Length: 365
Image (cartoon, rainbow, N blue to C red; front, top):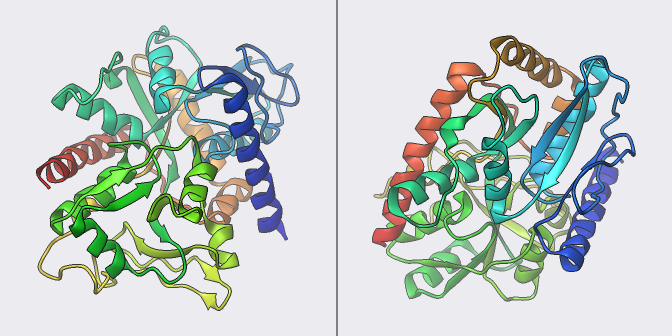
């Protein structure tokens, strides 16, 4: 019952996000905490973050560069909700600042003084597109990610290729080799495109990204046969898999993914690498480079006071250790992955380097 309720909340929030986008475009921002909204042109709604408006430490805004109802937004709000309960000396709120698939929020955030106590939802997709833009000129990048300091991972995802019932991975690979494979999920050169695109290129094919505004529209594109596959998180199509309207056919992982339950029971999703590598993939090709980290961090500004960095690190550890957060992460089929400080920064750099290799494979395909 709890999972069903959560799914309904997320579905309603995603629907609201689409309505807000239709009414006001994607350049607005808004915040939500304890029913008190402040700042920005567009008021957004989501899970109440249980704010502490009279907190002695003041209000801490968490800037999320993605829309209401998406995975990043849901995680930011759950983080704020739990942090507010555990650390009532602060009032954590979430503000959605959409535009440029995270770039608008990053531009805003890196212009802040390092002494700010505002935080940023710092996603791998932003990191990858920043480095692609800086290295290969794929897009204009007006911020420097070196100005963003990851504190701790709060969002670790396994990305999945979804198809309609009856479609096999062999069918998808054949379409890629014909040059006719179309996908929804993310934007061109997002981690989702890089993952499937580099895999298709290694198989001697290619994939075209059809852009949609938000996960609900991306899934609808697949249901309406406008695309052949939808690539997204485990959380993104959990309900559709349970209902049997979509099927997971490939996991971008080197570990078996066993979390889905369909109408006929548990589903084991084959992977791109490891012992559970899909047999439809060329056995002579190493596809492990297609397994790109996805999700992101709670982050502050580089140069922040060390006392604030230490306190935020402890808050993040406390949030993870609270079952309200960690159990919820498991319910929506995301991964518990904790990494902090220098280890978090090292993980970012390793993932960024792997992303550029995937981009080169995709470009060569």
